[in-house]
Length: 273
Image (cartoon, rainbow, N blue to C red; front, side, top):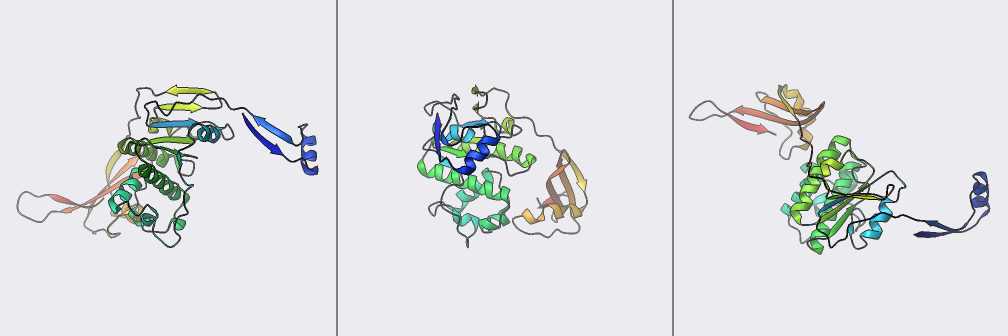
């Protein structure tokens, strides 16, 4: 039961009259949804449903001591993203967390947080939430509200799989709160709660869908789609033999190869990936 006091004013009375609603007083809302206990064994949960169905309210009531991503100290305005993590955390651990949430762009890691796209900011917040969870200790619940709401749906799927894998590897617990159902099978949660239906369902044994890719030889010009994300260099040798991986109609991978100069049978070495 949620209660909130509303001060009666002339404007409130006018709007209430337009829609035949009570004006002012105390508003009461009841949200009843079963939730798993923190004493149970689980690693990943999902609270889903349309906007306004009480997802966040249920999560905050059920997991009062959880880490909430995006609600910690402000990111430093004049520092790179990697410097926004706890000082006690080593650089390799920070990189592992950023990669673990699907934020795989080393050049962006070295930019200030306020220069990132909304999708990159969301993933950086998620990584820092996991960092706080690690600081508190194993089994800490980390809640991610508006889960995948600000990323494209292909990124949402791959990112969900990456996050779930990272959480289980780190020994933490993740509660994802969102309104997009297309990412649930990739997140592969141990339970799914839906306040609008008052239901709690346990994990099935179906696992994640299979990812399918098509790999073919391509022109070197395709490197322009990927070079901004390469950790080392944006250049590509003109003599490279190039291949691209495509998921559906979306380019998702690139690999370039050069002849290997040395004794032995003719061979090639990887140049850019």
